[in-house]
Image 1 (cartoon, rainbow, N blue to C red):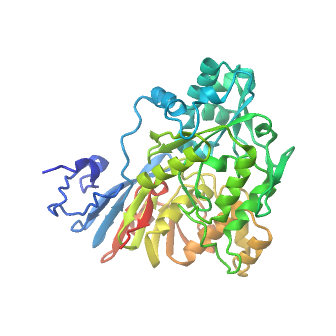
Image 2 (cartoon, one colour; image 1 turned 60 degrees about the horizontal axis):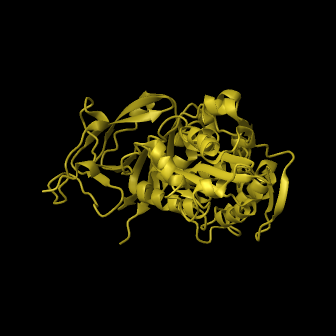
Length: 473
């Protein structure tokens, strides 16, 4: 009888075994959980276990938690083994395995001026620093492009500038010492490329104009755009503030005071935000893209590379396969962690975990969320939107003065209004209270909530990379 041990990891009551404990599943009901073996990810349901211990990543550390409930279900993506030979995987990705594109060495010449667009510290979970040296060496050694003709442009969007230390970490010290590494400036000296069919004026960093552009980013599910990575390296990555605001404002319902039903994780068909981004990226016309797909620990699983559209679309299919987890029914309670720093660096970034967890909780249910938020809300304006909550004018003000940070705040408040939400973080409790969120500041406070009695509880240890998908009936 076949042992599905590798597909059916269970959490254990034994703190000595911790996250490494396994139980075999033979698919015949002989074990106390169910597995949908035809699915790319596995849902483990411990029907008879009334008490389970978990260790959640929080900032740079961990928080142990004991959960008690009638039914405890663990949602976590099941992914393949990570890439072992990174150098060979990279070479094949940019040469014989290039998606809908010639090999990179046949796309560029030694005379070309090259801009490589990469992400900032908030996306460091994908570990692009592993690829930057390989790409630079390939451009220089294989194609013959001098270092002086190559630069890395940090796709900040509206995020803060990266410090020199952060820039060095993003590309590695040797790369930083060889070529220019530049922060995108969303406010000054931008080049206008035209207007999209939805009226977004496309203003971009001049360093992606008149040069051969390579995009490198991590693909994940995304609240507004359906998926991150790919064309997002251009818009919002290297676009003006006005361009970003015009694009992201498409996320609001055109009539009702709520988010549009056309936007959301995994949604691209008729998604106005995504389609607008694609038009903007086409105006830049990148010559190549490298798309990183990683697991919850940041280990590289795949690297579809090639045509900026087709290779990115391939990475989206892989993300669905690896991160999408079948959801049989929504739970009374969902308990989740972002997965530690940098995923929980601020509420702006960790809202992605909140959005994933929200998909798994019943209307009016309880959602408990662990996110350190050492940098507060993130953008300086984030919590400034709280001033519109007492008067009930948040939607009105968002439509009049749309900002990306404001919209993320808006969505967090939307979710809090449909659940009983608790958040363990460094954020002031009074700040969270305005949003309808109950603040938790100590492990002791958290433990007091962990006895759920007759409730059905879903636990998502790596909420940022776990996307619940309703099971089709």
